[in-house]
Image (cartoon, rainbow, N blue to C red; front, side, top):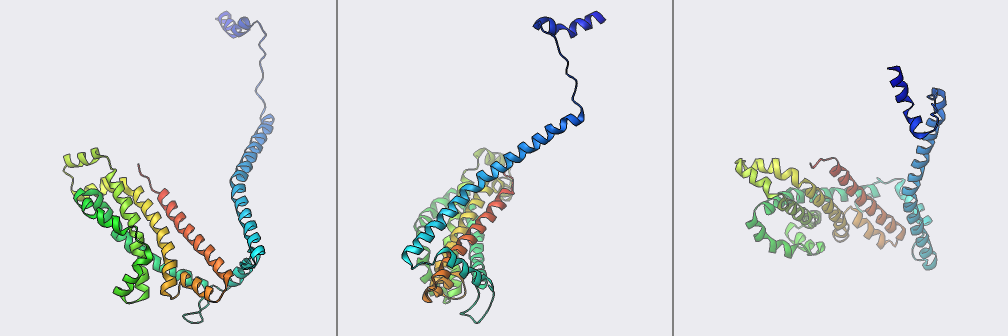
Length: 300
């Protein structure tokens, strides 16, 4: 047995014609440089990835600021980045002051606009999502409403404002009405498209099992259509926030749109530029919030 064992151990030496050199296992203290080398490599890779992700946006912002400063210095009619920044510091030093209905801080204007958007957008979701399910589920209803939706969907949001003022008689509900009618279409169309894309095999199985319409909705349609619903909601919140600025310019009151128009009347261009950034940042925050919410769901 010992001869066989020795032969098997030396088989590699015999076949290769070279001596086999056995390297002893490294001691624990000899592995420390290896661990440090691995940690340094991971740190370098993380730093490189950080620069890869951060440099392009920073370069874009720097280019935008440079072009902005160039246009401001050449035309002298638009305030530059430094002047706008100084105006923003003063503006946000006290964003919630209240000197009467026509003189309130930027914070109150943003909150009032968000309030109107929330009411109009919420009403559109309560109507649009169930309507989209019914349109996608029932072919007769789909064919019946298709021409109406096709005609009304491309209408400019501000074209609905006189109708709202005529029927509701007040500027506040008229603004909410414009948000409602403008933001309902993405939810209706995306929800209906999601329902129509549910595999027919699922519905055939539900028919064989004689599931009620409620169970078909809760067990089959809703889990399958949820990604489409959230896509419609994300698109609708962008439309709602876009429309409120234009609607408030025409209806007045406390809101970011009216604040922009009031600053134009005062020829305060720096505040108008600040309002543009505010509108963009708030809209981005609303959209990113809904995207994070969508990623928390599992659609399997």
